[in-house]
Image (cartoon, rainbow, N blue to C red):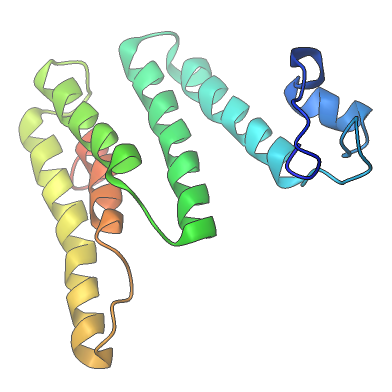
Amino acid sequence: CPHCQHTVRWFANLAVLSWLVLRGRCRHCPAPISRRCPAIELLTALVFALPVALWGLQIWSVACALFGAVLITASMLDLDRMWLPDSPTHPPLWAGLLLAWGGYSPFSLHDAVLGAAVGYLSLWSLFWMFKLLTVKEGMGRGDFVLRAAPRARRGPTQ
């Protein structure tokens, strides 16, 4: 618990179910547990279930599910700290390129590389236009890589 520092036991850590049973509160203190926790857990479950439901259990659907989980992680880091480290942004980019290179993507390697470049350069251009107009940085460079990652998986035109 972030309030009383009590370790949550495994049976009390059953995602949304435990949050509902405990009425959004810690079992050991009356402190509320944020609604954000079960919301993120539900979103993550959806992100893992949807690609498998759409395409079945294959490398592409697993890669899409993992990419979705990385996006959730990166979004929460960006929302809380306005910071995107390399660890959640670089692996999806390289995974998209490797999937295309290995033939596990519906797109060619050429399309994946071009898509990543278009994604990266689109935010890079906005960054520099904003900086030239305001003399401030409107976003961090981690956003560029995060924008390139889905383009590497979907190509430049999707």
